[in-house]
Image (cartoon, rainbow, N blue to C red):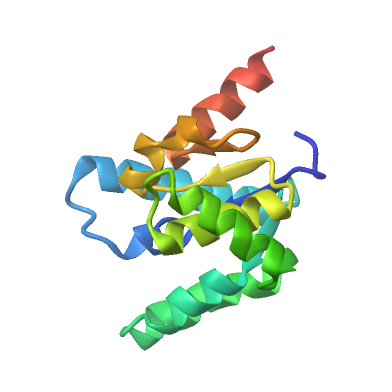
Length: 152
């Protein structure tokens, strides 16, 4: 793995460990997401954070979860601030049937030249082929991708 690869986890992904773990898919996504966080801590990937992550997480009603997620901001290699270029890109993405918040996440990842965008958001995953130049995966797909790359 190349440590120069930037990785973006959206708010849904950061919240996955706090979801109902009795569902197998959620449990497996959580384990994969926790492994991705481990890889970030080990500098295998560089984390990208954004103003929209700040905004969404600040609205979390659970102060403990909110604090735990905000701790990841400190690990970020790059923090993307709002600017007109991102807003314009988000408007374009929103026209492709993504929500406004999802469009902002995607625009931030694109602006940061992120190699991988990791999400558990079904709406983003369903329409990911509409976004060019950004590898959009769920955590399980990402771990499988890494294992396949390591076997080569």
